[in-house]
Image (cartoon, rainbow over all chains, first blue to last red; front, side):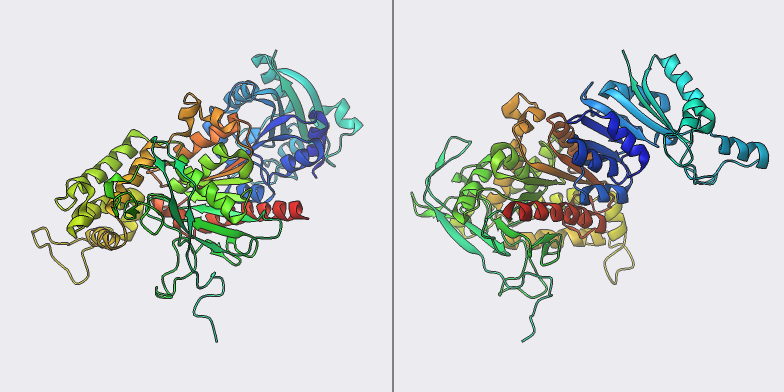
Length: 197
Length: 388
């Protein structure tokens, strides 16, 4: 289990109803089902991932989240989760709005482009950053929106989205003291729990 | 002696007939005093009787879903043999698989070709129009007869998927999982329009004789053939037809005839399908089942709210659609999924890329079969855990 997913699991109330956007192979949903009695669905576009969800007994809806969440009613989930997906979608803003329409709360995780190693790769080598959380070359990356913690928080502020909780993982993907003090510099992965009053 | 049949086949199978003397009150208001149901089974019912799977057939299907009949050639298995057998996605090593010919059919279960006990003549057009709900009730009687209190899964494609859906709504405690493939929550105006043209083809055939053609020793061949040809166009996709036939002329032909003979491959295919169908199907049954399709609307009992219909369902659901299916397009399956999600049902949805149109649900498409296999392997695990 990725430490990131364990952290998310800690944030989620047992017995909650969740929607996982871009659920991959369904690992998070299976973990939440087995450890926190959570029910819900994953949205996944990739054929192979969809199949793995079905094999794992995870409810998966084979659909493109870029097409929107119109099929889901307002506040029909306790949490709408998006792990490592926000940076890969076209309609970032619209999707954030949709998350907080369909879910009472939203949980997002993304690679922090402000992480010092990424900054160093651009500053010192003059190359686009490649690393554990950004494993792609510039020409084949699915990540079309790269942003930092500060960028994201500024967007939340502008949109009237409340940040209810934040966690930042360092390069070892553990929540350490360093990233707590200097999150935008030492944090490689950011996790947010969001709400809207 | 080596078997005539492939090792992953259920082999030689024998249909069985059961007589039901319990009257069935039909949706149309009439009562069917007694009836026969013809069915086949494959695999073994376990001692806990919890591993039974019901396969529901579509418009032109029947009870012979897998394996071989002695009188048929060893190259002509049941209609979904590629999916049912030892080690296949619907694994007969794990499940006891049941499929029956639906009431109103023409393959042995009571229908228009059966003898009406009141006048010792075939029912013909006097056979009541049965609904999907009527079918499900008669299938429930068959389940009782077989000692099956709850199906591990009810599975069907197209009209068969509609039966699986109805099962989960009508008998929530008797369905563990419902697999709804290439179906729709109800027919669209376009769907009904196609059915109406098919019906008019049959009704306007001079050999139809108001449905009493048996008395005249004829069958409305042209009408039934036209209906089937029309049906086949809706079962294929534009791209699939292009790939399969293109504008190729029939073998050996180089030039146009400038007349109305069969010239293009696609014409030859449709006529062949039409001819073959007339020899194996009854026109009154065809008429009846197109009406069964038109009438299907499980939401109607719940003020048109399909989610309300699913509120009572306890089954897990797998909904499958095919990208090029325009008869029951993926948008129709997504309507079902949306209602299932709103009702809070456990549900998964797979949209399989395919160029086979509606027919895809019968094809051994690798991703499609992997999805069925993966889902049913989990059903088999549940059944084993329950039995232990």
